[in-house]
Amino acid sequence: MSGFHEVLFPLDIALKSAGGPERRTEIVSFGSGREERNARWAHSRRRYDAGYGIKTLDALRSAVAFFEERRGRLYGFRWRDRLDQTSGLSGISPLDQGIGTGDGARRAFQLVKTYGGSFAPYQRPIDKPVDGSVRVAVNGSELLPAAFSCDATTGLVTLTAAPASGAVITAGFRFDVPVRFDTDYFEVDLSAFAAGAIPKIPLVEIRI
Image (spheres, rainbow, N blue to C red):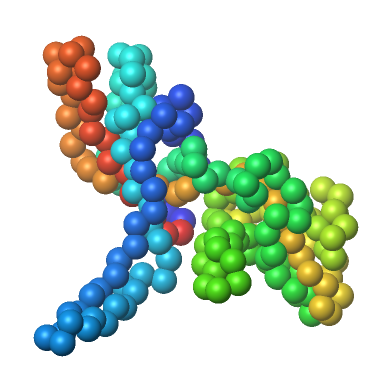
């Protein structure tokens, strides 16, 4: 993808920041009190404020340098979400997430993470896995690293041999969120910062 740098926002700032998923729902209210609700987006979009993670002047300088190198909103980058960065609730297991079913010919499978249970689960595409963190299993048996590859820039897993028809392919992984700055103006007020004010540094998830 043009306009994306495969670099990670400073972790010491990111892991102390605030943010989460956003959805766009259109609601039409009728005179009877009933309403119609329609989802405008198929996938949620995450927003963050990196300002909450800046506690020192050195961290502020680091954020400014990162902003300048990305040319403001021009280039996207990787962001580590403290709340949601692994395929499982704790740790990584090759059985964490189902990513496909074999048909005897298909070898490539996209990493996904499923939220919720059997009622209305949401499946989120994972485009930016952490390189070297992906583990894959077929029918519950973990594959050796030589038996598959994963493109860390797209999240596409490719097996060296096509799984048999009906075989369940699962994966575990750590991942980042592709984001960009949501402003072209990085306002720095050192007097306010010294007094404890938090600078606002908005970020928004982008689609790859």
